[in-house]
Length: 537
Image (tube, rainbow, N blue to C red; front, side, top):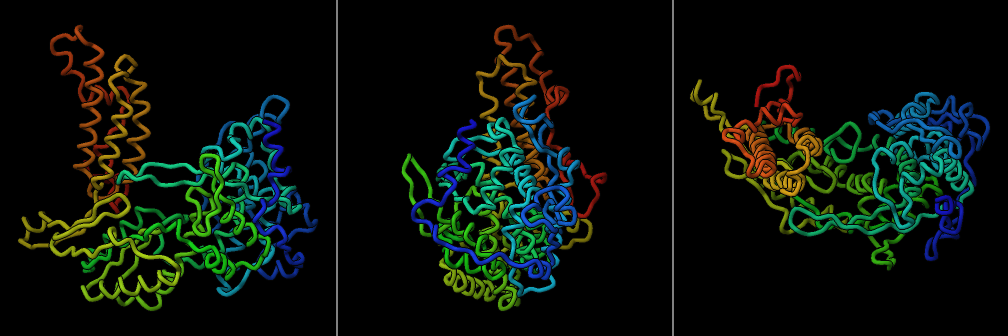
């Protein structure tokens, strides 16, 4: 392991042939220049990684956008002594690294918000700070993830010594010897049977990408518009769905359901770097972004260098994708807002319009803007939908949105009022059933049912938390019934010929819930109501 991690300072850390190794950055910006951008720079130059040096420098989570609740592992001793050193939440509280990073992010966000046209310098030095690298590691560790082309896992880095690993990585970055390694190609199945390509960077590259994201994200967040909900702090898919429901109930019944064809593989590198350069003038930071875009992909031992696209799976890729499509958001806010409202989650978006003519014009203008970016709408996945009186519906973010008649108003007042509702789509229901089948095969009948339930509960909780806001009560009942059926069959199979009369009837829903099975029934959350006032599903 020691020999593997030592490569962060070896030949693998240098740029590969074909990359811009002769790219010479400008001279280091002055202290006054950095202070003019709202960044408080401590005395000591490169010694800013120490605790005393960064006392006035900021730190933190996701800055004005808020941080994530982290749950890292237990604190252990120093490497080479009692065990690997694992900086986790306890360490972050003791040395204040998270608070310092959060403060830095708030300063960057405030400076970017005050001056929309400002280009930022000296970001590379902030990324190399010890507290920023520490916070980046903590988030990479929390996200877990597979090993890259070097086959070095997060656990092996912990055995090597996290402090030692981060210290060496910081030295490599400050010396300008860092070079991005190729990403490992992997595939995950899609709902339609196809496979989605992923690019898995090494742990070292993921830490550096996360550090860069911590510095760049607050600057970009100052520019991003309210129509974007994907891969942004304090924003979620549920918020996008709720906004669609509000618009649908407010009279927007003409919908442009759009999808960009091969978005992550069609991003043009030069255009993306130009967009990043509108806010960043630090040549070292721009060089880093170019390295990650042109690092190459290894598949079956063969390395290829794509001329376009950003690898799905990289830490920095979601931020870069939002920067690229921010052009669409900005143009639409200026020239298309009168036609309808845009609601976007990464490359999936819809436009809620009031008239059919507005919907047609929206599609024409969006195709024009995407054409300027080298993108195009997917011809099979893009369509116009009419929501009036529940004629049609559409799928978005795994949910199906459809208008339904309010039976309460019809029964009480005789009024025909249709309201836009959402519930888990057909693909989402099939995926959760498939996952339940994988965890409850017949061969597990001889295992303790409690162990099976312990593996089912995280799946049910995660699925229920995502789809728990809306009108999914009946779908939750269906999933509960299916889980009960699968567990009941395991118990019957285990009993076999020893099954006594009336014994199978006792293995019902209450029985499995007494063993700790998570129940989806009754967990629906209704927008605008406190959790204590939930209605039973």
